[in-house]
Amino acid sequence: MVRVRVRDGVLAGEVLDNVLGGQYYSFKGIPYAAPPLGDLRFKAPQPVIPWDGVRSAIAHGPICHQYDMFTGKLCTEPSSEDCLYLNVYSPNLEPKKPLPVMFWICGGAFLSGSGNTGFYGPDFLINQDVVLVTINYRVAVVGFLCLHTKEVPGNAGMKDQVAALRWVKNNIRNFGGDPDNVTIFGESTGAGSVTYHLVSPMSKGLFKRAIAQSGTNLSHWARAFEPRLRAEAIARSLGKDTKDDKELYEFFKSLPIEKLTNPFAPLTVEEEAELRINLFLTVADEKEFNGVERFFYGDVYEQLHNGIHEGVELMMGYTTDEGCLQFAFSPKENFFDKYNKYVQCFVPIDLSLKCSAKDQLAIGQKVKKHYFGDKPVSKDNVDALIKYLSMQIFTYNIIEYAKFFVQMDTNKLFFYNFDMYSERNIWTEEFGGGPYINRNSVCHCDDLTYLFCTEKVKADLTTESTKLIKNMTKLWTNFAKFGDPTPDSSLGVKWPAFDPKKEQYLIIGNDLVVASHPNKEDFEFWEKIHQEYVKH
Image 1: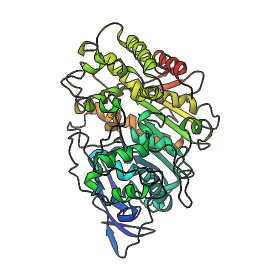
Image 2: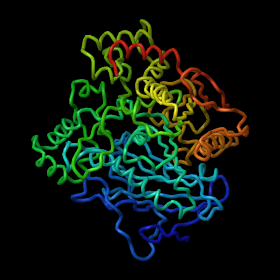
Image 3: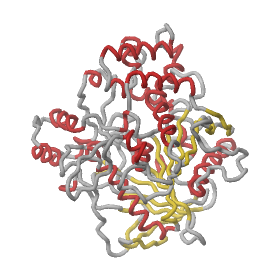
Image 4: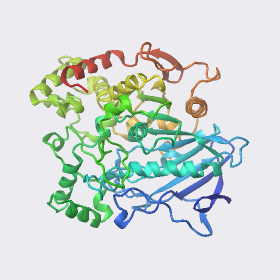
C-alpha cells in the first residue's frame, strides 16, 4: 500500500508490475465529484464530500450504468448512476521535476465507455515517464438529456469531464504530475470531446495540449439533433406524452437508471429506416440561465474560426479504415442491400439534414458514382464502401477541422494517418467486418491497442508489436512533454507541423513516413459537394 493526500482526504493505492517491465503506482476509484443522484441527476457535477481516515484506491469505481454496444445488453461491469470516479497512474510520486500529465477521455458514442483497465491499461504509456489519468463520466440520457431548461440545460457528461480536469489541476502534483502541463486526449467521441474542450469557456486554462484521435466536433455524430424534440420522443416511448417542462423533468428524474441507458426514439423517417443513427449527444448551443455555467454555445464552425483557445498545440488524425466500424451497427445478413436500394445512403449526413429530397438524390448519385461507378455494392467492392464510410463518418470532417485549425497562426498542429498493422489490430473482427474484408485492415479503435494494454487483445507481445508500441507511445508522450512528437532523431523521422500549403503529415505505419495532402482526391470531391449544396 502507498498513501497520497489529496484535497478531500487520504488515498491508499498500490504498486503494480508493468507488463513491459518495472513497476508503477496505481490509484483507482477516486471520486472527483459528488454522486449525481436524486435532484443532482442531469445537473452539473457538485464538489466531492471530503472523507475522514484513509480511502482505499485499489479498485475501480463503478462505471456509469450503460448499454454494452457489443453484446446488445446491459453492461456486466459494476455500474451505477454514482459513477464520477477517476484513476491515476504514476511512474514516480516524487520526481525531481513534475511529470507531464496525460488525461484520457474514452469513446463509446456517448452511450457507453469508461476509463477502466479492461480497455485502457496504463502500462504502455506509463513506461514513457508520464502520469496518466483516466475517467468515467455520465453517458446516454443521464449525461446528455437536454430540455433547454435551467433544471436540464444539457451536457452534464461534458461538465463531468471539466470537473475531472479541475480535480487534476488541484491534485495531480501529489502524484508527481505537473498541473501546468496537461495533455487531454481521446478517441472517437472522446476526440469529439477534446475538440469541444478546445473552445469551451469552462475548459480554458485546464490543459496545455490536446490529441484528437478519430473524431472532431464538426462530425454529425458529435452534435445533438433537435435535443428537446428527442427528449419528448424518448418520454413518449417510455409512456409519458407531454411537452410541459416540469412534467418532463419530473418524469425523467423519477425513472430507474435502467430505462435511460439505450434510448431509441427516431425523429425522422431516415432514422426509423436506420439510414441515420439517433443518439444523445453534446448540445451545441446551450441556453443561458442565471447561475448555470454553459459548456458550449454558438455554432461549431463559427467557434472554430473565432473561439479556439490561443496557443494550444494539437495532434490529430484518423485510421486508414475507420469505416469498418459500420459493420457493428448494420445487420450482417443483408449488409449491402440498403446501399443498393436507397441512394440516400450515400448522402453525407450533415447534408441530408440541410438539403431537399431532390438534392439528396442528386448528391447520392454523384457519391455512388464516385466510389462504385455503375456497379452494385457487394463484397467484391467492399474496399470502396469502407473508403466511403470512412470519409462519411470520420475522415472528411477531421481533415476539414485540420484545415480550419491551422488558419490561426497562434495554434500548431501535427496531423497523422494511422496505418499500423499487427496481431493487435482486432477491431474489424470485433465489429463484425471480418468475413467481408480480405486484407489487413486498420479499423476505427485499432490505434488504441498500441497505446493501452487491453484485455481484448489475447495475443502475447511479440518483438514486432513491442517495437510498434514503443514507436506509438513515444510519439504521443513526446508531444505531451515537448509539444513536438519528434523532438530528436530517435525515431528516425522528423514529423513536420501541418500547414495550409504543404499539408504535411505522418503516416504512422509499421514504418514512419512523411507525406502531403491527406486523402487529397477524396477530400476535394467531398469539399466540392459541400460547397455546391451548403455554406457554413
